[in-house]
Amino acid sequence: MSEAVAEKNYLNDPKGWKSWVFTLDHKRIGILYLASITAAFFLGGVFAVLIRLELLNPGQDLMGPDTYNQIFTLHGAVMIFLFIIPSIPAALGNFFLPLLIGAKDVAFPRLNLASYYIYVFGSMFAVYSIFTGAVDTGWTFYTPYSTETQTSVIPMTLGAFILGFSSIFTGLNFIVTIHKMRIPGMTWYKLPLFVWALYATAIIQVVATPVLGITLLLLIFERVFSVGIFNPDMGGDPVLFQHFFWFYSHPAVYIMILPGMGIISELIATFSHKKIFGYKAIAFSSLGIAFISFLVWGHHMFVSGQSELAAMIFSFLTFLVGIPSGIKVFNWITTLYKGQIHFDTPMLYALSFLFLFTIGGLTGIFLGALATDVHLHDTYFVVAHFHYVMMGGTVMAFLGGLHYWWPKMFGKMYNHFWSVIAMILVFVGFNVTFFSQFILGSQGMPRRYYNYLDQFQPLHAFSTIGSWILGAGFIIMAIYLIHSLFKGRKASDNPWGGLTFEWATGSPPPHHNFKVTPKMTHGPYDYDKVLVEQTDY
Image (cartoon, rainbow, N blue to C red):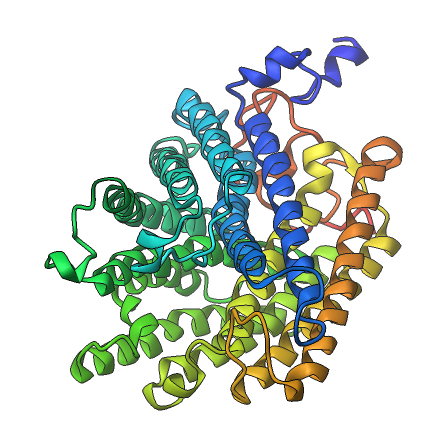
């Protein structure tokens, strides 16, 4: 076999733009998703910077109140629906799920490609709405305002409705792939924990997403035909929209965070070079979180007028969901104990996740308690909590996974020094931006307000400066990752010394993943039985 043939991989075989546009290769589809969600992240980030610049001082700095309402709504909608929900499952999950279980592709390659184009089609509606009177309702689209405003509610909600089909198709594909395409000998208890996390996430995607689709469709019908389901003058109930919306959107929080937790399991085991502690507990806690997530939507509605008994039940269930999350955190920490820890960039993101997600989880308990939630509801405390869970959790895990698998995806090593600098800037900038918002919220600063009292200005300015630091970290990250594609050192097949199957093939992988079907000779975390040294630092 010639050297040219031996070096063929999914990036260069086959060639031509049509081979990408019509590809059925899960790896290429994962890369297409990665490029798309990166663009969405950039767009949402621009909106975030504009928000923080406007809030640097009381009164008007850059925009009027109506424009501000549109900007913060677009930030939330773009980040939630276009970036964070598909970020790990659709991008990293699509690329690595078949590799992790030794398969050549997902179960339904054409459905996989269709899900990507549905994502693009839905995103086009969302972006179109920006230019036709951007929606100003907040990303939750609460009635009755969303049925009355003259902004582009229909294009944005229709875009989210279409995006839901992409999520459902991806979830169905993952469930069938995990059930049917594992190599012989890979039992459920030999699955990598990232696969368990994707499996639990897929269940939520398939079960919960149709509820959001129906809810948004009802909202569109309400605006177009005045059917009255959310209109009290016609016998409807605007609070019913909140029940429908949060029945999906709280499980959706775990669509966002569960895959991130799966990545953290991989990172901690690999960079500790130690058998994961409590494998079954971590695996089943993913399913436990998926189940309980359907039972806690009412904690978003403690001040909506629901009965005291209902509020007490939802509060109890909210505390209950912390148990499987706590199991994961304590098992990760125990895995670290006496491990041979390598502080490479992916591991630094994993440790950041542990710190930031723990803060997000603990502050969630404050919001789950009835007495404190009434005071903190709709303040900046909620904004800070949400970002510590979503960005401090999901995004940090996504960045850790991206740096972990970058050498495998593109066959190139990035600059270690600059990756550490960027990680530090992201970590520091994030905490400066959002920890100050816990203080603002506890002092009574309402969220989403365009103007505020002078007493809140120092903390708002501090938060805005943090957003600049955070932005600088992401700019540096983009530069060194792009630079690595052209000038980076060639990566070995297993630069981190991992035991899962993706490290048993080339970097980048060939078109059908493996030249020879791998065999199950050890578990994914058997570092106590198999010695694999780290080859790139």
